[in-house]
Image 1 (spheres, one colour):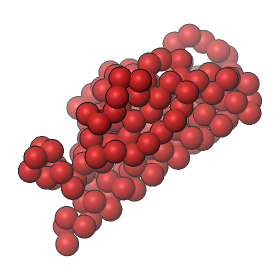
Image 2 (cartoon, one colour; image 1 turned 90 degrees about the vertical axis):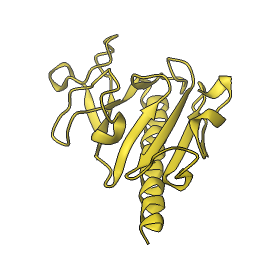
Image 3 (cartoon, one colour; image 1 turned 180 degrees about the horizontal axis):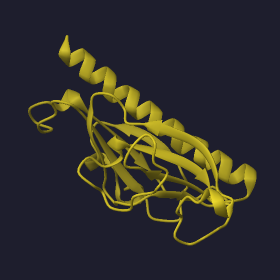
Image 4 (cartoon, one colour; image 1 turned 30 degrees about the horizontal axis):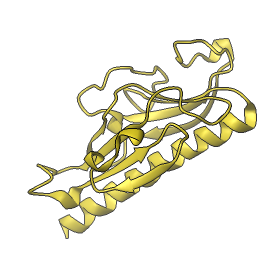
Length: 161
């Protein structure tokens, strides 16, 4: 039963992150403003963290419109940034690791402002891809914003992380 629950939790985290990334891209195009997805330290924080940290995006993330268009892409309600979505830490997820650490910034044309990225999502109990592969799911995201689900971010080609 725990294998099923681990797979279910990893799938839920994949769906939540995919939904957040798609929302960010759609809103960037619709509003003609940059939209940022960044990890936060806790469910009450709005401070974007640039470093990977111990568990990456597993601590939660926010999606916001960068209305002040600052180049640091940090959330600031006082400067007019608009919080669109907050995702608390997904339950039962040990780690959400980006191959290229940082944040996702979608430009008004829908493109990522950085290179493509691979994202590994590990449910609690994940040891390695050879011993507990069912507890890992992954996403590949291209610069144009195309997202696909894979077993591991090592499956992403060079154009998508």
